[in-house]
Length: 200
Image (cartoon, rainbow, N blue to C red; front, side, top):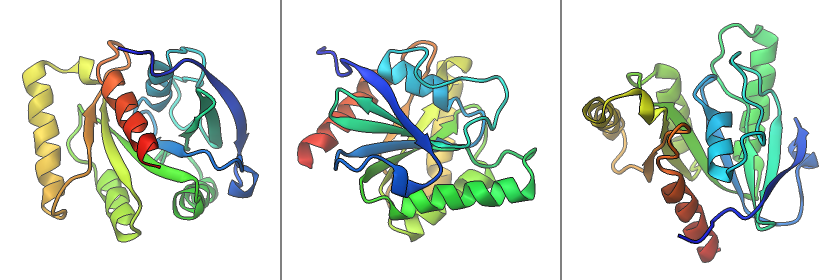
């Protein structure tokens, strides 16, 4: 397989989409509930364990973080949602940051919604996905932490989640299953981004 990520580096962090890079390169944003394994996934995809800061404390990412990959496209790390220990004011501020980026950022080509494959469908995730649909936001789903389950339990959980979503959706967007520990799904996600880039 050709190396789909030759280089990746941090560019900028901020809370204001007006300060995001303005060079017209496509952006692929990653979002999920706090502690879903977002930073670990970003590091696995880019092959750089120190690129995105991982923390044992959920809710650490409070900024929009841009990383440039191959000098061709941006990987964007968005704040996690649904962390209960934040204050109401902080949660409102985060909601504003997330919705401002997701709804108004023209360079955002696709949003990857991360879901922990070990859990049943969570109300907050289903509501977020519903909100994306209502606003016509293009997205894909990435299940994380696949190494934490047996193959049969993983398949059962992923299928249960898909069936739950199909109660409200006529068809599902692309779905990927990943593990930051084993690099499962790395090639599929990167090739998908590559294929989307080729259509732009």
